[in-house]
Each structure stands twice: as structure tokens, then as C-alpha cells.
Amino acid sequence: MTTESANIKAKNIREVIMVPIEWVVMLAWNKECGRILKTLRDKRSRREISDMLFEAGVECSQEYIRKLENGESASVSTKIITAIAQILDVEIIEIMPDLRVEVSNKTLYS
Image (tube, rainbow, N blue to C red; front, side, top):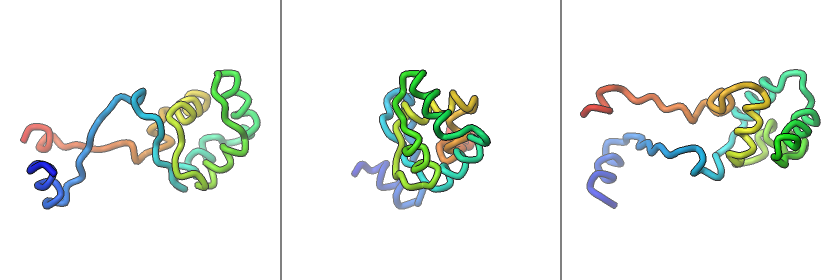
């Protein structure tokens, strides 16, 4: 462990590392994300979403969408969740609000 990492751990600070979404294969998923997805899906059926994903070149069954909505999946591929966000016409951050990290100016310039 580096000295900097040890200092972060000792201060109980949450370290944030930013990488382009294209570099990330999977994202952690939870029941809250599932609840949000179900709300955003609104009256569209899982079948309709699955069919639209297929047309966009992304394989995702309606059963997998159900598992996501019920929080039965521990992770989701960025390819699938990005495509779902596009179909629902929302930003991925709206489905997965834990991706948002607020950084104060003090943190940036200290």
C-alpha cells in the first residue's frame, strides 16, 4: 500500500478513480437501481424493451430485465445498461445514481 493510499484509508476518505465508461465491462447493481429501472420503464413491457435492445444489436432477455428490476442481479454489463438508458431516453446516471460522485473544490485544489 502506498503512503497516499494509507493516508486515505486512515482518514476514512472515499477515493474516487474516474475512467471512461468504455473501459468498464460490468457495473455493480442493487435493488434501488432495479426499482428506478422499473419506474423509468413505466408502461413499456419488458418484452418491448428486450425487442428494442435486440434491434439495437444488444442481446438482453425480458427475464434478465426482470432480474435487474427485482435486484436479483449483482452486476450489469455497461453495454446493456447503456443501451437500456438510450431506449428509455435517460442518462445512465438516472438509473444508477450511485455513479454520481460530488467532489468539492477544496478536494480538487488541495
